[in-house]
Length: 148
Image (tube, rainbow, N blue to C red; front, side, top):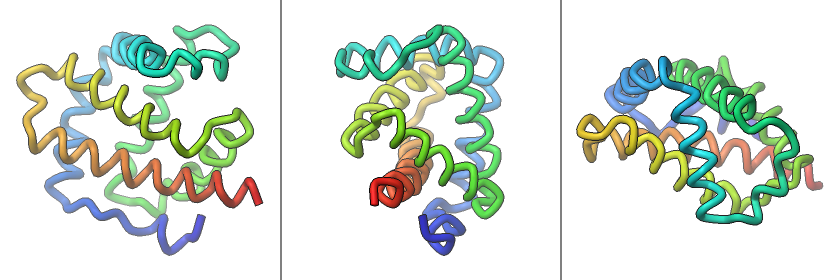
């Protein structure tokens, strides 16, 4: 992943604030959100289940912890650049393909919509889509570099 890319996010300050504010609301129910995410992920693509070997409750909580760290760093992308790069490399070793990121994003947005309900306005949704797209792009770039 090029450090130049990792240092910039296409999100504006308002979008970053929306993502951070809504994450504050889902953080207390992180386990529920993570469980919803994985249920939906495996509904969309049952083949992805084979990538996970451990306890899915623990995996769901780890997922939400990582998302929380990324969300808190959106206004300081340089602070999370190395962690995002490392995450992309690890996911490559786990067998995650570039196309899997689209499925993951769809499941994440769906889970957020379920728990945020009426607060998941079009503006909030767009902010989350932008945040996810930026992070996924950085991870895929690291994924490609790990493959070479």
